[in-house]
Length: 492
Ligand SMILES: *Cc1c(COP(=O)(O)O)cnc(C)c1O
Image (tube, rainbow, N blue to C red):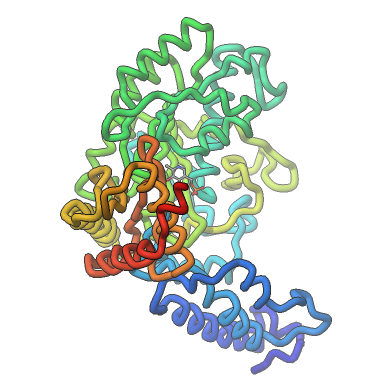
């Protein structure tokens, strides 16, 4: 191949560059196909062995050439990566990326548009505008809706709470946080969410200078949804104590149980207390595409919504969005800079809506997928994994040595291995040890969590190609590694 060190073979825009790109992508494509066609989801390798296997010299004086470097990465890196496209990978909200998204990813990286300004992106800016507008429509957020593509739920939740805080401070204390920093009342600012909400609510409060204790959690009901009556009691208590609730956060799909808070009831409370209503739909937002969209009822009353495309929209990482109902709210974090987006520019320079500056054209991934598959096509995939989760729950419920700990709400199934007459402490120890052994074994990749203080196991069924037989194999692998666990020593 042409990799002789000549600069023109390293860049697109010349014939030699085009040829090198074709060759390299061809080779990389084959390597990716091999890496996603493995017997087991993970090699089980320990980090020390990977440290040992990687070349000592990341930056050698002279390189080994592109072909050799790709082959080396295939062998040293891809072969010991977690195969997210394997049917027995079922741990986290970590999807097998779908082919339209992968094709888009190739276009995104090769054309390398940056969404901060129109003069770095052209059509990409307009595509992102259209995508967020479409999503706003999907959630019925109204005529003034707008949004911005983010790196995922973390960034979306952070920005939502930033906007919420700053709007509240301006409206209630006549205080401009963007200019003057936190107001004297900052110590009394509160965010309310459920006890099962994602940790990024607390992380955001920390990053916003409020401290994570500014997040007040409300107990959930038997199905892990926020209890609206307990929310009333919490809001009343905070108000009596002179604290300021600037945001109520509803979760549409909690990480462990996929629980969806009663969004309509939360919207009522947020409105009554003049608080921003944010819906974290990073996980469950994809329901809006399906026949079960009504499970999100109340989301249309949100001030902002977080959506993750790299979860149930099956797009390659990273890809999320923050939507707002009123585009003017982005103004609380907007900046104008002379070189990038002068205030008098007539062009759409999206940097004003984002917490990032240089920003990938990730919008193309869902855009291309939506165009290629249509709503029905994507909804089919979502519905397939939801159905799989229900079947897996039935399977676990009927297995004598497993206990189903909750009926699935989305595509997570939480359960426990309970093989014999062991006490709770012994079962905890067995479940922990068996899962760890399974990570080292590599035959299946599953997650753990805690339910009401007991150690539990979790399957997040992200792969529409996972069958009940695959899950049965996962359970067999778990039984198998659990046999070698000596519960006596663990609990002694
Ligand atoms: C995944 C998730 C997040 C975090 O999003 P990232 O995309 O990992 O940054 C936040 N909230 C919920 C409910 C999630 O499922």
